[in-house]
Image 1 (spheres, one colour):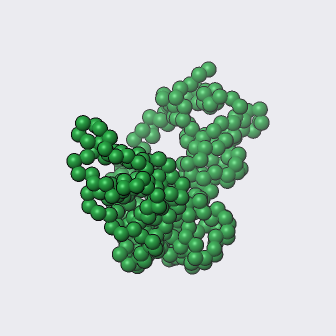
Image 2 (cartoon, rainbow, N blue to C red):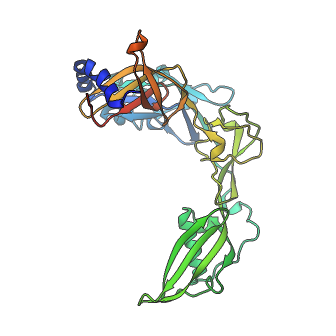
Image 3 (cartoon, one colour):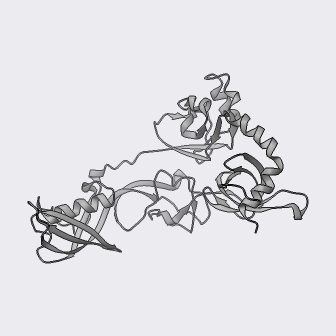
Amino acid sequence: MRTFETILASLVWATVALAAVDSDASADTSTITLRSTVLLQQGQPATLADIAHLAGEEALRLAQTPIDTTTLRPDPAGWRKIDAQALRTILEPHDPMWGAIQLRAGPTYIRTFAAPTQSPDQAPEPPTANSPAAPGTVRQLAEHHIARVFKTDPKDLQVLWVEATEGLLDHSTKDLLPHIDDAGRSDRMALRITLYDREANVIAEGSARAQVRIRRDVAVLSNDVPRRRIITPTDFRIERRWTDATESPADTTTVAGREAASNLKAGQPIRESDVHTRVAVKRGDRVQIRIITPTVTASLLARALRDARIGETIEFESIAPSRADRLRFEARVDSAGSAVAVAGGLSR
């Protein structure tokens, strides 16, 4: 495969004059790029910034333009579609001159979901919880350290100490300087703890291990979802549950619109590994590639050589009548139908 710089030299220098003109002309161009799917909480007013990526001064000026989705007819699953024509109808009353802004991608599918009905204080208490830590002890300090590590509120944390150096957790921290190191994580979290006095003398040291559970929102499947099907808001409900800290539940705000990585069963919490981003580019699709260098920006049409999701870097082949003229290079997919290739410089 040719080096990326060589490919850029072949593609960009051949059209440098035209690309330079395009670059100058588009320097002030604003763009509205519609997102593929948007999930909004019921009662949340939607704005243009919620449904699209905005770039440029003119587009950003319209960021807070309200988008009334109630005028759009939902499909059987509850998704409402905003295409280019619908967006034009919405924006024209707010800014008759918005037509100078480039509109890309689309359509956008929008659906609302209900907020969790169960408050954090109503979630069932986990079993085998330790009694509250005594104030001013190593244990209290260690549990606050664990809460910071997992970025959660201490009230949503349950720590069950299963092993510790004798007397360490109950040791007072008064007039001492504690130091806590993470000593490893698996199904249990291990800590190495040292207490110093003001002259840096070691007063006590040892280790402790604990099982850690976190109370958090999780998406729980309401029905079976087969592999490769796109998950919709009707497929799951949001519940407040205690989970092991080592688990990685999927982000409840982004589950809808993602693809099932395997056959999923009703009643199971959705883990991050259970879903992945929807395929944005399929093998054989023609994709618009933006090629960016320090001196010039150009674009060309190329064919994807495999399926890819947003954020993935894959190989493309430029479109040319003769196979000998086709060039292969890598670019990162940034939306459905478009990708970006960047190089630090050109070499001949």
